Image 1: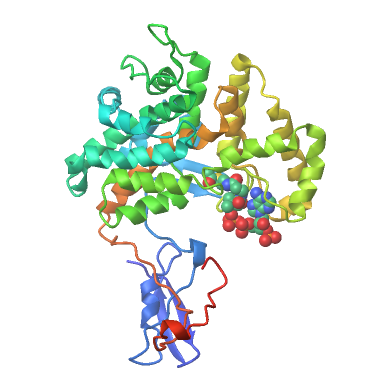
Image 2: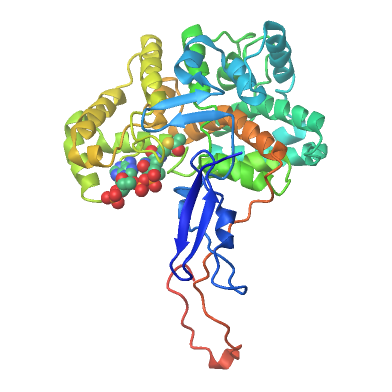
Length: 437
Ligand code: ACO
């Protein structure tokens, strides 16, 4: 029981209220008792874009944006990136604890045996245009899995949920690899169950006529680390979509597709693609100062910079920079890195960026690694969506098990017309609202 309270005096009525405080938070519904009379709906809080609203209680991921801290289930991201495999971290995020050796073996085996796609789903993918954006293909195909596994709608059955979680984690790399090969016109490659999660993904991406694909260990480890870094990030835009769509009890495939759609936007996961476009546009290091001036003058944003929560260096960006160096030992240095480093150096010394606490985020360096690995920018966000599927599913499961959660349904402040009478068509003026009509 909480003993702390926030005292509020309503100046309209002079009535005082003591709103209980729990972990520094008041319940928005407690504001409803603050009324001017029985007809009054009560006070609401107004928070466009959720700048200061906790939508849930969560035990999955902890971020301290001022200190640059990120932890999954209490474990610092740096330790997980150094010591774990991605599937070990996926187990941790979904189950809450690191797996024992036998738990990990069963988990890896389960995920590995769910990597195949139904042949009809493969045909579905073949129906896309040769130049379809991979993210559009990814979102649609994940949603289409809902038609293959109709039992997934039974979201309150823990066993059904468990199976869909394994299916989704197993199948997203396969879908991602197919979207990649589709664009190149290459035949789809079936999963190889003898390989690790990341090696198998590389096999499905890059195997040609050789009988067995052998991944470069340094590159597969770098990709595994990138997957660990992207696995969850508490209540970001796409996790919020996952929870909101899931709150209507839709199945996890369509929920994941909706979350992936949110991720695809350039202000969220789509930023990694935009960073590479930006580095291309800048072209050479000596153009960096002029580009920064342009941003400061209000022409666009520095993509891969800034974060709603991190107001200090994004800890993932630091690890990615390290992983980039490991990749470049094998692939050779991506010349874009020099432009990125110069951009970071100048931006971090500049008053505009210092004042607004704008630092490189996870997307700033990830694209440079992806490009060095041979990916084109339009697939970058799909590479983000593979590991983030784990985070989305953990958030979805936590939401379904939380007795306080209901269908997500925000309030609004209505700003439209009061009641008015129907106007016959011949009397209408044709004037429409300015935007979008
Ligand atoms: N470049 C230049 N200026 C910026 C940038 C940027 N990348 N980001 C924010 N600003 C400025 C804003 O213009 C604003 O300035 P003002 O106070 O003069 O108006 C100020 O910094 C605050 O920015 P907001 O937009 O209010 O910050 P918000 O928390 O809403 O946005 C966001 C965060 C969307 C990440 C933003 O920083 C951005 O658009 N960054 C570029 C896109 C990007 O890299 N997204 C990836 C984020 S990480 C992820 O989703 C995986």
